[in-house]
Length: 174
Image (cartoon, rainbow, N blue to C red; front, side, top):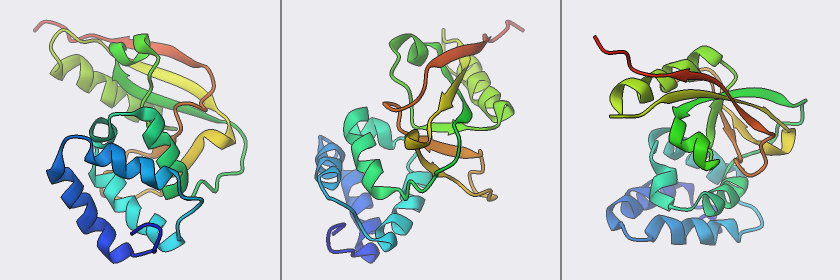
């Protein structure tokens, strides 16, 4: 349906994929990644799916497959200078060097996510990461909005600059 530019069916397809389990998302994203491009209509229809599907990378199960599909599904129109980006996450992500897609230009937003990891995940340490992302790593800069407004910048984790740890957060015993 992405190849046919059927944006109306895209949302229903994502709901169907969520119900399938197994490798449904990975297989679908593998097919999308093979497309030379999709219409602007499909890219626009995919954006709410990305915003609402916070666990999409886990559902796809392969960062490489998802990164390749996002290069087709997101407009990737950024042509500016390198962007300093931050990500609040678990220390495990940093130690594995397998980074997520959602970053922000706002270090305070990243700290909130790191604090969440420190306080809501047993025996975990939250960390704030920083990178200087080149333009080709930037897939989408979300416009400010009230709904899920985190200043999200979607980046291709395989094209980011060097990622460094800038802050550690641990839950303190009360």
